[in-house]
Length: 123
Image (cartoon, rainbow, N blue to C red; front, top):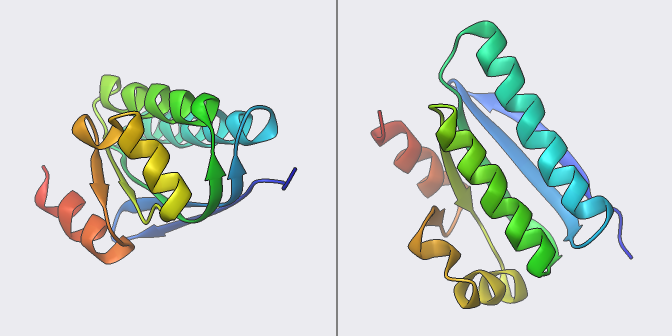
């Protein structure tokens, strides 16, 4: 099992959370939940509308539990009046997202630049 790592950056008012490794049952799922809740809490505390990009370009694997938590986390973002886009899913991760029909519900972009453009266009 590969440990999940997260890198958080802020560019032009957009929070970019990049996930590295596996988003699978156990620590990977906990990492998604924790990261998104921390970002939402900080945004609410500061009175700002959160704009979040979840970058999966370095994510090597996602299982059904990871997809379920990613879906729940995206829903929590929207329910709190924030905006979320996902970008960069590669091969196996993308296949899992297609099978789960994730992209039919959430904004999924090929790369980070298109996600930035998409989220900036959304008010």
